Structure formats: structure tokens, C-alpha cells
Length: 133
Image (cartoon, rainbow, N blue to C red; front, side):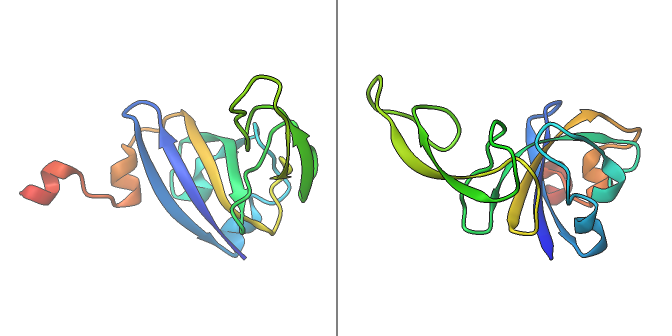
């Protein structure tokens, strides 16, 4: 089992992508949207991240107000997964629950407590200035 984790850094407005496999991925199972997780799992020691969303392997979005770890068809009027074109319009859409399970493909997280080292250094991402030098 593996997850693609998108880490958002609100401090500089950038996002970073990390692949988690096996043991690291198992640490996310059972958590749900809104849970605070230690960043050491993602290679960010000293950081804390909060799960903000994600999608399953087929691309259906996770929704915070839907309990469980499976996909369901809901009648929705607005919010995550559907944006109505006219007021009062509703539609039945497939939405994944808020719990992280084995069928989740992407997890979105946001940094809430920064560590001592910069994210770029910990993840080995070259900045624009380093690429041109």
C-alpha cells in the first residue's frame, strides 16, 4: 500500500509531494480529516501537520462531514465534491468518507507547527536560486 502525500506550507505558499510506502503509509491508516500527525513520518522531524483532505484511488474527494472510510453516493447541494450552478440545485455524487483507509490514493496535509530546519532542506527540494547557480 502506498499514498501520495501533498504537504502545503502556508508560510511560503508552496506545496510538496511525498510518496509513502508500507510502514510509513500504515501510520496514516485510521486517522481522519482534522487529525494532527507528527511530521517525522513524512521526513519532517520537528514538524506537525494536520490532515486537510484527499481523494481515493479513483479520484473521488474525501469529505469531512461523512464518517467512515468508504465511498458513498450522497445527495448534495453544495460543498466538497459539488458546486451547484443554480441556487437550490441538488445532485447525487460519489464522495469518500473522512477516514483514511487502504483505498485512499492521495492525502493532503498542512504544516501547523514548523520545525527548526526549512522544508526544502529536509525534503531535498532545490529552490529556484539553487537551480540557476
